Length: 301
Image (cartoon, rainbow, N blue to C red; front, side, top):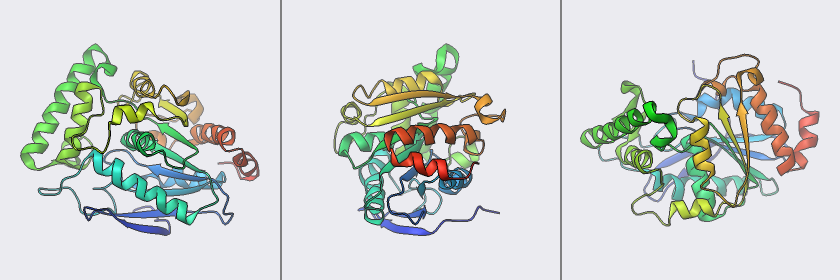
């Protein structure tokens, strides 16, 4: 059975006709900080339900949406349905943030990105300088193969290029059948594979230079690497953070001990999130001081 869905905040239609649904678990207080959650590649927003509910109990309004091509978004990837990093960075993230600002005009907004969601959310922040108080990155690192060591790195490079070639041949990437990501657009896989190969966010036809945009990020950033995460190890997180010299970056390692001994990896932290939510709440209280009082009055996990 699928987890229950939260109330619809808005529907969005992108310039190319793609449709997204934005949902919110909100507090009545219009000044409550809003966390906008951007999922990982291949992950539908509904999978973050346990995390959303805990953040809400800790005094935050939480907004979710699917990255295009997943969950409730339409159309789904297939032959003739093309999109990549550019559409997510330049259309989708901004449209979601505008709807959030319209719905919660008096609330500070934080981005919480997981993996690809965090990477593309950062690029958007650098490119467009939206009204955002800070960014939380969880299990979010550069995909550059040199971040993965002398054995895993070359294997990662080879697989990424094979995945991109396979996606180009098929017209989409059937990740749900092949064990990596989900059903993805061929162009998105091509953008990802290019970053694996070069270490740079270079997207043909982009509105601006994405690497230069990252250098313009001046926000507070909490960058969390997760124990046993083979897809975003500490070196990969460090490589991404190194692209933001102007940001106020706090690094934190989410260890199994902080999760009550529960197993962690690139995805398990979503369910085993108790210690992580404590750290996010503490950090948010420093970035957005009003958060501290709400967290203190909210029930524990």
